[in-house]
Image 1 (tube, rainbow, N blue to C red):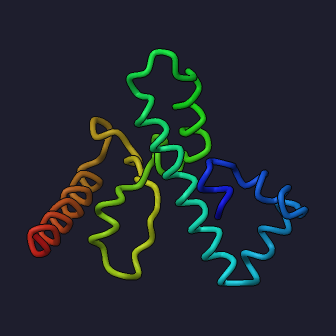
Image 2 (image 1 turned 90 degrees about the vertical axis):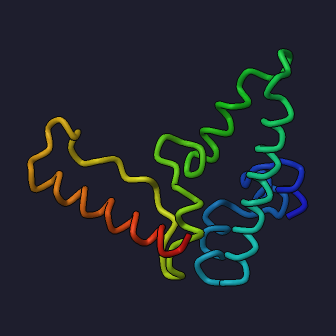
Length: 133
């Protein structure tokens, strides 16, 4: 976790302890505690780079690749299909944090049945949000 707190990426974590990525992956699959620690380290790493980005957003001499680095390394949270984290926080306990799913078909090309299905889904979510809010 020390390395994540200072912005080092997993390849450095592995090198620091003298193992391969595959070993880290296997340990995560075999040991729940290790998987939890890796997840905590990932969050620390994301927080480090997010703070770095925020601190440098108005700095003209900041490295121009900072946003690209964050987008590539943390695309799950910052990419074009980033999840709606706030909706996930409000979701049932067994809900998974997955990417926002783009519509299968653009609305202009959707069939009546597809539009009705989408409307029903929006109504359901709206009802749930009103119930929670």
